Image 1 (cartoon, helix red, strand yellow):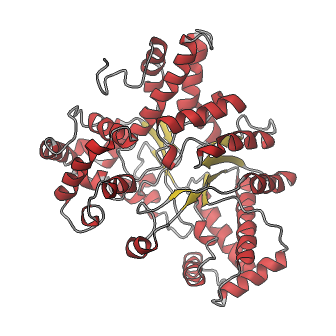
Image 2 (cartoon, one colour):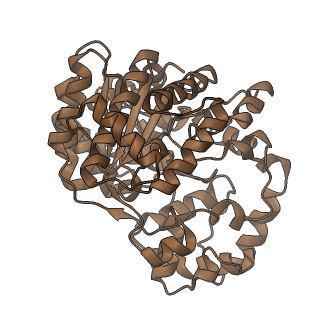
Image 3 (cartoon, helix red, strand yellow):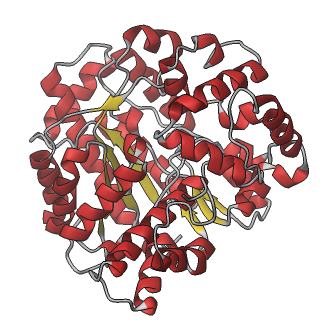
Length: 466
């Protein structure tokens, strides 16, 4: 019987062990999609206790706690930090076979070097030990990034963000690059006229452009896109249910924009046309600057109306959607490609039944101009666990080129989530190692090592050109 979370955790054979310990483990991390707050990096924040770095903003843990019968007071409410940690410790034994059980103990082991199992009995000791370490300079935000061997962090930023904290980080000559990502979801969110207009008013303020019509709206967005580029941004990101590709005429979009700026709600057909026009516009902008566009597709968000009204979005009430994706996705990419305006692209799938759809879709638009130009992104959100990662890599292996894959991201708000990169790398090495042991791949360690290093770091380094 193997020991839980030993050095060969998830590595089931000798080849996997060699690939991980001698190659994958040593590679730096390019975290090209995260939700880490730039302000906390700029200020080199120190957390007072593990609850603050671990439970604040983590809807994965909140969902598990609610499922375990923990009242909201201990998730997002006004309970003390220690009380919230106690409730998480009570929940952890019930997360067996959920990736949260693995991540929890991986994050205790690295960086805290704690190998105890978290449960109600060990909770007080672990809380005190981790909290004491977090208060030392060695565990500041910047030093945590150094401990995890992070080379580049890409945050997720609204076009109206001033990026002042990114500027400060750059001025400090911090050796780890912290770069913004252009996330213009609110520029497309015309389902609610009031909220959309409030956001457009903010855009006016930050650009000093009076937005009278659709053209001035696009001018303001281009100005922010230009500014993000000046600040080192090389990626956009879109969180969408599907890729919108309705046919439209420019005059229709101008009229739709005028309608919503007058505070009137739109028909569903108008909403889809406007989203289609905006998504195409952003794709053209990204191509013009050599950026990579990312699409996180397939989440059914904010399903619980009562909790949405109480807590707002991104609090743990989202799920996998079952949208019909292929036709619109092909139409969207084809329109850009037809005018030679298709940027480097990463598509992230949330419904595992669509893995093969995504893996084949990228092959339609790879044109030989850039190796791996079209990417099937890593297993995301509900799928960034062992089974989800294996299924994503198997689909990509069967239908594309796994070795051109740009690898894992944290997609997280926590500075301890870099264990997800370790988790991914162990699973990758075991996947390849098992094929070798079964005689399905040659025992050519140089070939295998190069493959692992490419996927863990080198592909992303070459692909993004940060």
